[in-house]
Amino acid sequence: MSELSLEALVQQVLARNPTLPQMIAAWQAASARYPQVTSLDDPTFGATFGPASIGSDQVDFAYRLEVSQRYPFPGKLRLRGENALAEASAAGNEVDDAALQLIEAAKSAFYDYYLVHRATAVNEKGLRLLREFRQNAEARYRAGQAVQQDVFQADVEIGRQRERGVLLDRLRQVAVARLNTLMHLPPDLSLPPAPRPASWQSSVGILLFLPPPVSGLFAAGLTVASRFQPDPLPEAEQLRALALSRRPDLQALANRIAAEEAALGLANREFYPDFDVLAAYDAFWQPEEKDLRTQLAVRVNLPVRRARRYGAVSEAQARITQRRAELARLTDQSNYEVQQAFAQVRESQRVIRLYEEEILPAAQNNVRAAQAAYVTGRVPFLSLIEAQRNVVSLEDRYYEAIADYFRRLAALERSVGGPLGLVPRNSLP
Image 1: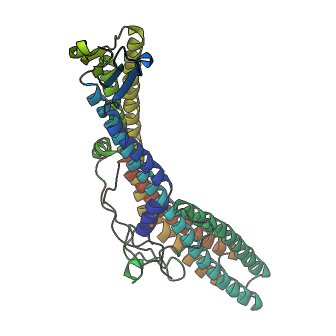
Image 2: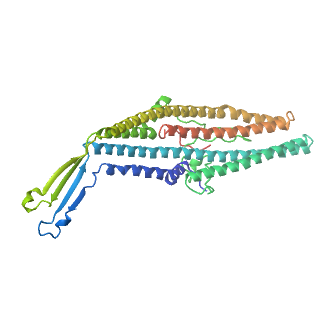
Image 3: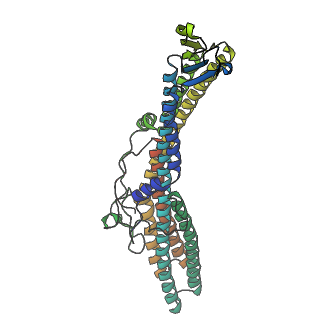
């Protein structure tokens, strides 16, 4: 069965999650406003009749036909179009922001799924080793070299490991439900297993942004074939500048400021009149007055309700102030998010290196020493069990640190507005 691929998962989430179609529809709706607001109003046609003239032998049939067209004051249509285009650009940037959030959510869920599978593998290895310990303890008890309590203690530890297996099964179901929900699928739909070590060599595997494996933490001893070596991160100052230049939520807010500025210009234009151009043919004039029948006219509205217009200008100015303050706040938040994610990624790198170079080798050496001492009767069986329990716990925490690193890296990529291209294309450990 093929393994779950991070790249394929992200593609499926972007293709199937209903959030993006919702945002795209909003962007399309905003884009469709431009031809509406830049178009002239429909022309109007009017007809007037003199009822008493119908069938009269005293006067000609009296009627009046007219066509009129309203023209806004110069600049109004342009400002309306600028407002609509800025709102459409903001909606488009919000689509990009939603995509970034979905990508982060997909990666985070993927690493949760990966962590459950690795924890399950650690749990199964621990069970196998505990059963070996129990067999050794039982053999020593039968030989009169140990007490029966050692066998009972092994049974207790095996029970604890099995209980953890039940917990991990529940966490796996939750992780599967989260992934399926992101892909707009039934939550209980089965998924391929998480990637295994050296999955990049498999014919069905896809290159993954994950470090090489740490293997042999138990009976064979700790061997790190290829250590975790991610590419160095740029400085935090560079990442903050990158975020300010390309984060779509910041760009969307800048678009909305442009839209509000166009709205302010339009509010100022409302102090000027619009024009109605009219052409008419008035047959109420009698035959001897035919030269007066063709008429041209211009009408203008009188913008005398100035309080309403001053109110509109004040509202537009206040909205610009609001948007600019919002942009300043979001800029500060962006800088903080980048700095926080940067520090967390750096922390994860150091923690992983600490586990690989110091903690896990020491824990494994402790197990070997305890096992040798128990065989010679120098330490009780409980010391061996405690050493093994520590190894299992520490390996769990090591894989959790790996998952934390990639979750934090996904958060950093989202906070700077896109991928960094820093992670080596290797397999999950």
